[in-house]
Length: 305
Image 1 (tube, rainbow, N blue to C red):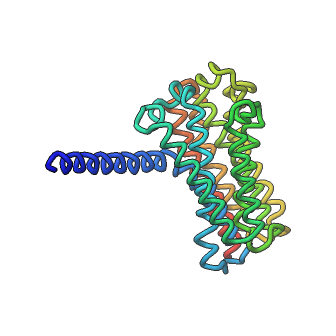
Image 2 (cartoon, rainbow, N blue to C red; image 1 turned 30 degrees about the vertical axis):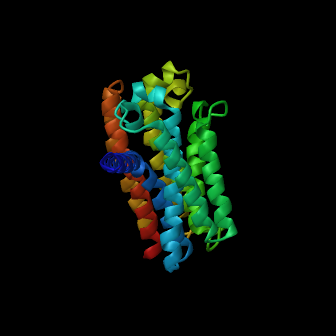
Image 3 (tube, rainbow, N blue to C red; image 1 turned 90 degrees about the vertical axis):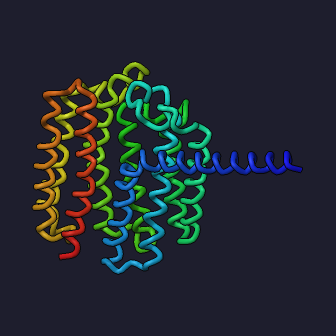
């Protein structure tokens, strides 16, 4: 009887330990990708606010951003699972590469997040379900072997940009998917992805090249990649200077976007001097990601006022 109790105690202790380990694993995975996920989540929120003229239903205000957050997190984590070999060179600190998290735990989390995204979309409407499925599908095609859009020149960044567009469409799916200002916001977000995504590829230059990938920095060159990334924010600002009245934005939007373009120049220009210092490039990329939030703020300013 005493031995039975001891075995029971040992089994319960083992289960508790496994549960704690799984919770820790999920936390580490969330933490590693939440910043990137919030970029897409914010565009859903902004699109909802713009399409609803800042009068969204509370239910939509909570649920729609969660749909995008779960879908984008599952996409990033699926990519991490597929990229374990490459990330041993590019970013050895990631949880899956460092051994902090088991691959099986990551697969379970990807499955749960994808199901949660579709489940929440089901609670909204058919349009939201379709946009959510499309968002998950582009994420799947981006990473899975044989299709692997991430290994294809330009298509990789286009796929990420399409994901951003779909995130915007999830935001306006409860109001009007053809709301002009929401569409303009979505296209602006897509364009800005051509700034941050290639800079991220620049930081992964060695690992990608060793694995035969045809990313933008590998094909057009490192200097041209930085030059392209610097140019695009000024193109976005110029578009709004010409069309802000036509698109029904306040003049403060092109003004704010001009400051954003100048900020992007200050963030990205130093990369020219340390192009082969990939740790430095990665730090600059993290700063450049904040430009997406700046874009969303600039768009909201133009609608509120």
